[in-house]
Image (cartoon, rainbow, N blue to C red; front, side, top):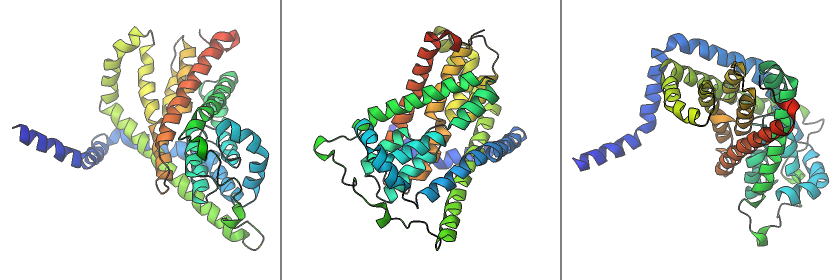
Length: 352
């Protein structure tokens, strides 16, 4: 009997993903009434928010990689980037673009850096840990103004998000740190040896290639948005999230946290936009708690973004571990900074 049970466990492990995907396909059919509108909402979200916000940045970064901007920024930022983050100064380009654009631009640039040997493998993994961030347009515009209806909340979340990003970068300067190998062998690497610079003669070719690569990336992101919209809909329709809320309610009551936050927290772990949207729409007196949880999710990014990044780095030799550790740390630190700011400055306390 024990032998048969052990054999069954091994068989389940081997066929785990097959069973999981069959259940997903069956659930799509079973809960199609609620699933179809969710998929449409996911497509709308992607087309109206993700594409306008990210696609231009993808094209811009692709084009900039064919210029001397990375070398130029490397020389200027090296006195700051090297001692603070223990990364070649050229990593400053990834840091800046990751801050001003949004998920998953930072990860995409880090992979390009590794592909073109602009930074070493360890340096690119350090970049992965802190340069893939929520963009200012999303934090202030979408989250602050559109969802919470308050610009100050958006600015607060942006400031704590950036401070947490820098903090994570400082912590991860010691990722696989070896003093005797601290000197970066790529410090004097010349980008022109590995990347064709853009000129009048190859402008059309470079522009076409940049747009093509950007379209591929934005379509992959769209696929993740739609799939996770479908997954969240299935989890709601099947009652899984409802039962999880009931299981977690005693813990939240013990911690004196409003139990109405359980649903959006579970949703936010899966997909950041839907989770924050639900959090911001809750009518609770303790708005500060909602803001702190939002700060965590903006830093963490959710499972959907994690899988997007994983798909981007899959063809490289970079490890996903520093990204996972970095984003969890980013979320915790951002939430902590937000909590401190709300308690220090009275005008940031929005509780009713």
